Length: 277
Image (cartoon, rainbow, N blue to C red):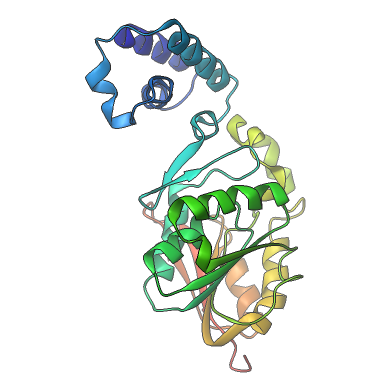
């Protein structure tokens, strides 16, 4: 029965110290049953088929191996839309929605997303601004494949171009808006992170240096690709606000400020294009 299987799985996950065990078990059960997560309650009294039981057990084993639930079920809800997730991309985080909300606070007609991954930032912006067009770049061809599938699912593929590029290397033109959630974890901090992150692409997490390498590269190249009065928004780690703000100020960007997330932690650095742009 679904209820018994959920209870057993939740207990197993809790004993292994997995936070949100009940929530995770419910999401995996929904996927095994082929129903929405909000519909599981309606099926608590149902008997599971042999195939469903086997699938659910396999999901629980993968979660015990600390694979993120989004990878197990293949999707994550972000800014009100479902994005496909694979081990080739960073799992979209709720705090990244802070960047999306800030970007949407002013008009724009064109946007460049550096290190697009799932495309969650770029595609959310294009979905909420039907008149806008955008470009997403990533070093990973596999990540771009995931972003392309998400663009098609969200109906914005005709308004976005996805290209393989190391930051600005293959980028042409200027944009009203540049956004990025770059790898910002220092190499020395990686070993202490949650084990779930071992299942995500390392290149999307760390620059293998001090965590500021990507910001230095972006600060050097962004002015040449921003339209006059254009904006740049960069997600940061909660201790990097002043450092990243200084990098942008030093590169000539104006009106630099730091935006906190819902937990009041520094989350996004915002700046305006240099006057020379």
